[in-house]
Length: 185
Image 1 (cartoon, rainbow, N blue to C red):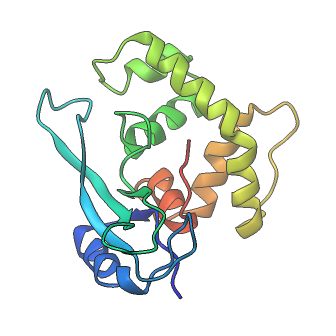
Image 2: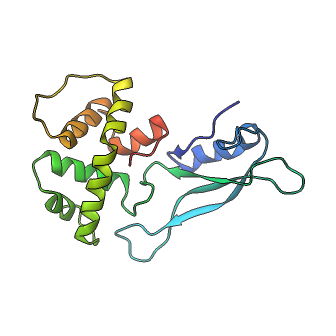
């Protein structure tokens, strides 16, 4: 039985996920045949004002009408977005790129052209720093690469590791989420 994907590239790929829901295992209760669509996940992207944007779809494990599902739902997100942030994966990648080039947290964040407060830069960096070991461990399982010299900033090291692991990708953060089916942050 197929596992439910957490990330998808396009609506065409999501349509294939949707068509296979009845054969997919619920990630919570491990039941098959109980998953149904339960709506769309919207969010406000950072640079587009108040225009709502589709970020993903909600899947529900049905426990209605004598069904044996668990009643919990799970989000299946577009890999272009970061869970819990209004920033896109491309913006996080650009932030990492500016940090690796030597910019400070604030100047790297300001270079994104975002209208968010400076506290978002510190929140993003803190979340990134807390997840570095998980990100690097996931990358090391699939691509070892040459280690940078000692004393190298771990955020810069992660940037170079992502770049080496996904050399043809426009946004390695998005590729990370889609390839490994885990959230980047």
